[in-house]
Amino acid sequence: MNSLNMLPQWFIVFYVILIGLCCGSFLNVVILRGLSGESYIFSRSKCPKCNNQLTWYMNIPLFSYIFLRGKCAFCKKHISIQYPLIELLCAILFTFTYFHFGLTLKTLFLWIFIALFIAIASTDILQTVIIDIHTYILAICGVLFNLFNFGYTPILSSIIGAVSGFLIMELLAYSGTLFLKHRAFGEGDSLIALSLGAIFGFKNLLIILPLSILIQALISLPILSYEEFKNKNMKLCLSYVFVFISLFIVGFLNFNSTLYNSKIYLLVIIPICILLLWSLKIILNDLKNKKIQNTQDNKSTAFRLLPFGPALIISAAIALFYLDKIKLMIFNFIY
Image (cartoon, rainbow, N blue to C red; front, top):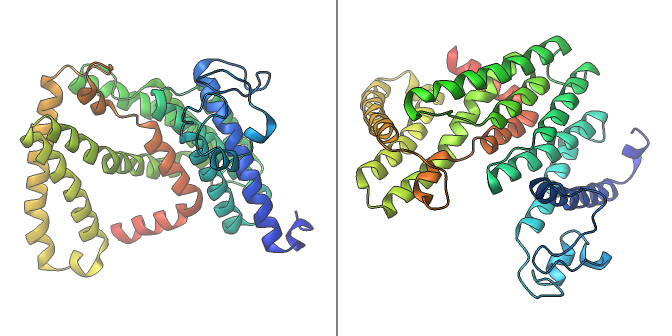
């Protein structure tokens, strides 16, 4: 690694981007064939619409999509935007990791984590499916990461974190039956928490899980509000909007030391909390009164079951780079 660091930085960055693009191209195969059950390795690339096998120059990451103008060379049907987006995302995150940690063994581990993060989040977004083997590989890599002292926690905490991550999510999932009459999360989310516990350890997992809930709220509340607006359910629509705005206001007030220690804080926070509780009561009543079915025939209610996996993955990705800063923010908030 030291000899590689002696190369010109532009040269290293070029190859890091290239590696990221190629890895992203392979991730597209892993994602789509994982969902279809096809072999990752032994089946040649083909158009999913006309089934014609692709030549090598149709498989160049990102560039083939641009040169073909987003259309299959055979049937001329549009190629999913997923292909270039995954390739570009992987290249950007790989490059960001290099700039953050340099060319180290830790960077190689983080590239593996990022690749698996993308695969897990993508299958969950596309079909609300989490492929178990992806989480198992992530968990094993997380344990090895800490075993070789590259990680964020001692090896014992890594193992405890894996077990506790699974148990905490299972407990939360079954507690959802009190309100929803079914699990609040899928079993795949528990496996993600298991793998994140292996990477970050038990104590850090207690930071990542609440962060993922906040991220889930910030992602899902605008979508839910829009769905209720289309259904002309304005009371519920405004409830989601109020919860969304309240999260921002409460967060801003709590992390602003000047306002936090002033009389203005109480004047603002009390009505905001009352409004937040009123909105949550309306939302919970709606969840209790409606049978939520995640089917294609009922798209509006399906959005109430937005996958939680992507929020877990996003919070973990943030923690890979900014865990110490997140801890410092929490410390400053408490003390």
